[in-house]
Image 1: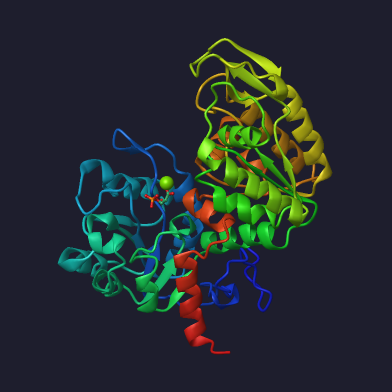
Image 2: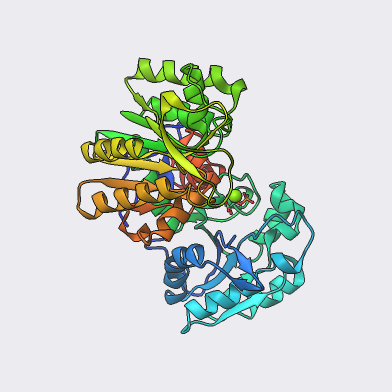
Length: 425
Ligand code: 3PG
Ligand code: MG
């Protein structure tokens, strides 16, 4: 991990002037015998009471293991799902604790079926040096979601030091990532540092030329992302359902495709801003179309100027992919979020999967620096088995988008605030 070398902090260019050089890491902090609260994002898929994907657990493991090895009493905090104050069997972190124990066979991992109060206090007090406890789902308490200082106090009472390793929850102004950082000495974990460093560098000071590829269904959900990116990137590839709104803005026929006519003016504004900022917007040149969105629906390829009135665009066509390949081999850095087509429905995920393979290949060959994030994007990389080939794959979905949109993330701000208190300029 390369840390954040002060004074040239990397960030996302957010307006608030976030000084990330104030964010402290746990390197060199003496944690022997200390109760260390570690906020992770163990919001993982659970299937039949078993963790179905361990990615987020594995990615936070180095921080937990490092603290345990250094003799800390490690107290793991997380949310799971959106239980909104009401415990349910499906949202318990018990199976997650079991999985963590499996991944750390040489460490004692306990599960404490409470997040605050007497039971949590007793359970954490019983921890020995180097042991780990996973507390129950923070979102069983509305104080978590409401960033309630009293709930934060109840959590803080369980620890001496606070470490946040949950970048993928950093966009939520919740008690365990925000208010708590004002109550205990607060540090960033290794995954948090890796995320903000990799994403910050790609966005703020990328090796150029730099391209962003943004796909997904709707322009309306990514207006800020697109607006921020056109001022920073050399090329912005718009793909997936949102590309149809841009094609419509160019006066093209899009048949019965998913699109957002109300956002045509937004698409036009983004294109005008791109033009002023010297960013080239790249749209599909051909498409895979079908009469309906259905598994194995009969499909054909047609040029973007020739989409039949009764057909819908469901994936990028071969010429669009060839165009993307050509452009990718001519840039140095790529930032990718969102699929190029109706990824979930066969065969309309083909374009996205081909893109995943191409980005991985160029990265493996040392020609490309690649940073990707978001649920569908990571799924595509995993389907192709190439996630490890990319330079950096974020664990975050919503937080990744907020970051790309140029927003300050409450959790990162909270860590910077805590650091700034102890290093006055
Ligand atoms: C995520 O999975 O994106 C994070 O865990 C945040 O979850 P949330 O969207 O329920 O806040
Ligand atoms: Mg989510």
